[in-house]
Length: 201
Image (tube, rainbow, N blue to C red; front, side):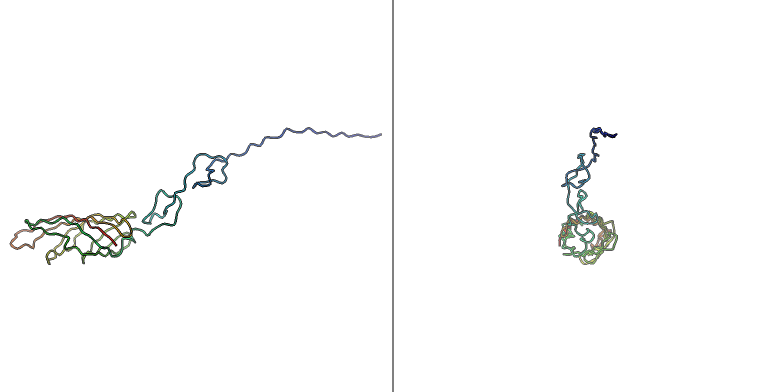
């Protein structure tokens, strides 16, 4: 007696495997390229080169990739010796015109005091100011001594300015006070004048 075993099998239909969808930027030239993405979702961001250090003088808030171009902070750039070219309004004292241009030195020396504070030496008179991360200078009102025709008098000074690059900038200062050095004048003569001072190195 013989025994026969018949084995048969039914072929299952092929299973359909649905791939996992991973959305993202699929363009490898873009800043936010996602190598795991297989479906572009339209979020690609172009690479924008620039300085990413927000304390640098050339910080670029729009950049997303640092290009190594960062320059020193404006606080550091502001320090040192600057040549100045003043353009001051003349002071009219009873018809006699006095120019502050002649009282200005050829150079000023700027030193840092920490915390973005500056000390500006203008021919022996110390003017204090502050500079921000964008190069803007603020000089709050303060009293200095200015030499008028050989006689020093107290003068209030205030104003603003800007360091524009490593070798250029400007300051707009207002000087005010009273002149009481004119003979036979019973009361001091008040004055106020503005100076636009170009800075260069």
